[in-house]
Each structure stands twice: as structure tokens, then as C-alpha cells.
Length: 496
Image (cartoon, rainbow, N blue to C red):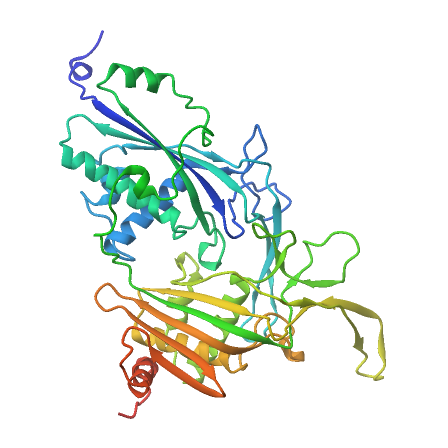
């Protein structure tokens, strides 16, 4: 017997169902961990139990989209408020007992083929000794770049909402999916170290008016189990065009400082990778990674390796100035007991262009006899730079303070002048870079700024790209202000 409570239960009258599908393509290796403790690797890849293809859960997609929508509307580190775009599209938060159900249904995504897997290993380095910390080595499985997933979203538009509210909901969906289209949303683990970058290149749309009998029948007969794009359906490259909305009036509230720098490789570079080579290979080879539209794996500068180098030098700068400031932990993140904080500095993984692989034979020397150490002959395959070799670095600092920008500028200076090597075996001259040009971009909601640094005929030039008429001296003073802010923050006297 039905109770009065069930009779009075309020159902959602659905007036329209909008289905959006897209093809997600990974641009960098991606870590979708399964949490399997019995795996031969520390972090195993999450797979579909039936097809053995990679599995990207709908919960992961929803979390990434929700976080992007909140940050775009309010900025980094700001909590959601009731009535925001994120809560309107994805429902109430866990802290809101009266929160509404999400009107957006997101299906799990399965890779189109059994994926190519890359194995990466990592280790934590002791800051004092510069050697590996015991018990802190790990390995993980990564999906190779180029892996494709079929995404499927279904938006339920309620009948009791007015036309303005219905259109606002469709706009919210367009804003969220635009983040995927532009490649601004990462998925999986270690997104702030270059993994998980992706984009969507094609969209398809179906719209069903459930108040029309023909559309109701069409929705019931729709192949919901088939999540890929249909060959006889029109595809769109823009989600705004797909949904018929305009996304030009919204202001991006994210405050971030970006560095895009290009360097020459002076000598050689070696980031160790012994797990990707098969057959006859040197004892140590430089790290390579697959990239879409490339027949062979490409040499890369990994985000994890570069972040470790930058953190170690940042600690050295701060300690040299005699300070105990937690600025490095605030930038790069930390884990101390039960306390932890994610890194606010995003370090991207970049392909090294036009480098040459060469094998070097080496041998250890017995320091007592001065002769060759028995059984210690080994060979290495680093990459060597030429005139056309380019090493690019991309950094992004979220919610930057002026003194934190000053610390990044000092790190850039050390890289630029070959004083800060990257990769391994720096003691024998590997990993030296020489600066060619750098773009510094401050995406501030009220005061965006952009500078360019480049070297020409042995002279360093700094220009303000936002104000072409500004003098070079004033631009130098602007960047100098960031470094002075760092000195002031660390308690050092600054000359005015």
C-alpha cells in the first residue's frame, strides 16, 4: 500500500533531452589509476573488465568539468556557492543536504582500442645529498598520447523552468565542454606534472522535445548503447556552434602567471628510462614518449623531472638568502604527516625537437689503482643538441603573489644562463640550456600583462607586448619589482 509520502513525491517533468557526443584525444601520457594493490606496478591502469580497454569513469569526467567551471567563474581556491554554474549543472555539493540532483548524465568512456601503455618510474631525491631517497621509488602505467575515448553527455531540461533558465543550463554545458575543446582540462593523476592533457576535436548533437510524440519515439529508439560518433551525422569542431550559443561575454576569473620559454641544448641531456626499450639497447637511454601523428617515440623533457630540478634550486635560493619561509612548499606542494597541499605550479611535459641520439661507452675508474674498475663497463644513449635543437618549457603558477613571480624569474634566469642543468649526470656537463626567448604572461582578471624576453646579437631585450610604446627600462623595472618583492618577503633589505 502506497503511503501518503510516496503519493506526494515530486517528480522531475522533463521537457527536453539533449545528447552531446565527442571524441576525446590524449595529448600527453595519462595516468588513470585502478587502485589495484596486487598489480606488478605501483599504480596500475584502470581497464574495462570485458574488453580490456582503458576505462575513463563518468565520475572522473564530471569532477574535472565541475572544477573547471567553478574556477572559470570564481577563480582558483574559491568554494562553490548555491546557484553557481557548477552547482546548477552538476547538482548540490556534499555539504548541502538540500542540494538538487544533477541534470547532466555522463557515461563512462572506454578507449576505442586496446591502448598502448607506457611505463614510467620516478624517485624522490634527497635535497641534501642529491641522491635517491631509500624506499621512495615507484613505477606507474600510463596511457600513451593519441588514445581516443568516446564521450557521451545527456542534459535533462526540466519543464517547470522558464525559457531563460533552460537556456542558462545549456550555456553552462557549453562552457564546461569548451574547457575540453580548448585542452584546458586535464584528467587522471599528476595533472600538474604534465600528464593528462587532452582535447576534443569533434562533436555531434541530438535534441529531443519530449512534448512531441515523434521526438519521444525517436528518443526511445535512440541507440543509447552506442557511444561513438555516427558516420551519417553532421559533426562540429566548436561546442558553441554545436549547441547554438555564444560564449564571448563571460570573463575568465582565473589569476595565473605563465612562462613559455625556448632554449638551445648545450651538449647532451639524459633523463633515464630503462623500461621503454625492447631487444638490444644501451644500459641507459633517454626518456621517450609516443605522440600522435608520429611514427616513432619522441624525446621529452618530463614535467616530473623538471619540477624536481626547479624545486631543488628554489630551496637553494631561499636558504642562501638565510630564510626559513615556506614559499617553496606553497609553490610545489608538500605532504607532512596527515597535512598536504597540492602544487600550485603546473609543470608541463614537452617534446624536445630535432635532437640526435648517440651512444657513449663509459667505464668506472678504480680510485685506488687509477685503472678501469672490473665489470663496470656500461653504455648510455643521451640526446645531443644541434643548431636546430629546441627545448621548450611551459610553467603555470596559479593565484600568484608578486614575490612568487620573482622566484620564478630567478629560476628562469638560472636556466637561461646554463647555471641550472636539467636531467641526470649534471656533474659531467649534461643538461645545460641556453635561452633563446621567453614569453611571460600574467592572466589577471583586471590587469592582464605580457612581456617577451629574447636575445639578439648578444644583447638581451625585454619588451612589453601589452604596451608597445613602453620603454625598455620601465619594463625592466617592472620585472625587477617582482624580485624585490621576493627579497622583501624573505626579510632582506631592498634598496629603493
